[in-house]
Image (cartoon, rainbow, N blue to C red; front, side):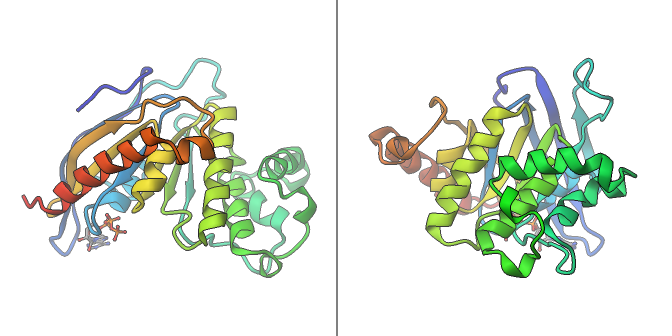
Amino acid sequence: MSAPHGSALLELRGVEKRYANGTVAVQDLSVAIGRHEFVSFLGPSGCGKSTALKMIAGLSAPSGGEIRWGAAPAGGGGTGHAIGFVFQEPTLMPWATVVDNVWLPLRLAGVSRAAARADIEAVLATVGLSQFAHVYPRELSGGMKMRVSIARAMVTRPRVLLMDEPFAALDEMTRFKLNNDTLALWQANPFTTLFVTHSVYEAVYLSTRIVVMAARPGRVVSEIAVDEPYPRSEAFRTSARYNALCVQVSGALQAAGATHG
Ligand SMILES: Nc1ncnc2c1ncn2[C@@H]1O[C@H](COP(=O)(O)OP(=O)(O)OP(=O)(O)O)[C@@H](O)[C@H]1O
């Protein structure tokens, strides 16, 4: 396991997840995540990427090993390791406007609409949706719905943003645009991003580090640092360095697909 840069935010040590039906989704899964990293999890279908994210989010308990969180930064508002989650489906409430959809996590935390207003307006501005605050999801494109979903995850100012194949269902141009917007948000804010994808190209473009997993049982088989500066742009996407990294990561992914425990 390579050490993340920055002090550890989160560490998975020998984590196992055995579902009630006996399926061992991950076994001896170990990875350390540093503060303000952008880590992508890449691996064949069924290698436990979503399971790992759900355990980190606290939505599912490990059946073995441990998940350790580093101390919250001093003066961090006492939110502990607050987490934002973005799924492949934007999962918006169809009967509620954009503002009310973004308000949801704050509402659940007991914050009134009036008290949440400034935060909601600020986060909608960061995802470029200020003009759409009062429309309903059915009036939005797929990319715009995903922006609402990202805004909803960001409005609580999480320490960790978990993204589970968020752009897989979008067309390529929208996906590229949202890749850039996600990076801009991450650069402008102190949160750490953990990003699940099936795309080698997306993982290389976005990440500080790529964790490659293999299946049966799910585990980490290699970690590849993407030591390229930010901001990243189309110049990086078309560079020889990007191409070389994609070849390296594809090789690791193919090896992972060929590996059985
Ligand atoms: N609730 C569940 N109960 C039983 N088995 C499950 C459950 N959720 C996931 N699994 C199994 O655990 C393994 C890992 O699943 P998981 O969804 O975490 O993989 P993944 O890498 O995210 O897959 P994909 O890339 O296809 O989304 C799979 O064999 C899956 O069938």
